[in-house]
Image 1 (cartoon, one colour):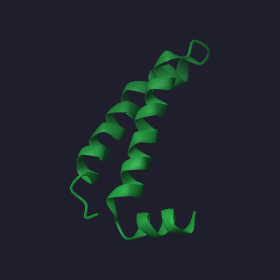
Image 2 (cartoon, rainbow, N blue to C red):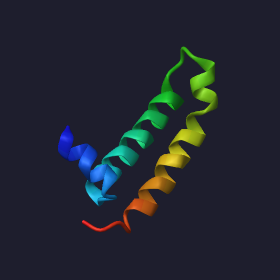
Image 3 (cartoon, one colour):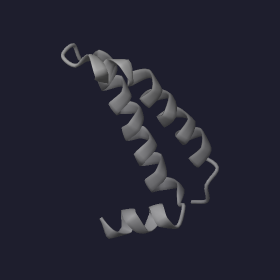
Length: 62
């Protein structure tokens, strides 16, 4: 856990890509769930934010 937080603070690619991937997965889950309308409402924005974040952090140093 400490190495993950250290990687986030130092703007390393691995931890930020993992966070962006989790955000994309969360957005897809929010899109497919049938129970909560508010989650469905924000699912596209969540997926879009994760995708843009992934594109940006792919330029971070290893």
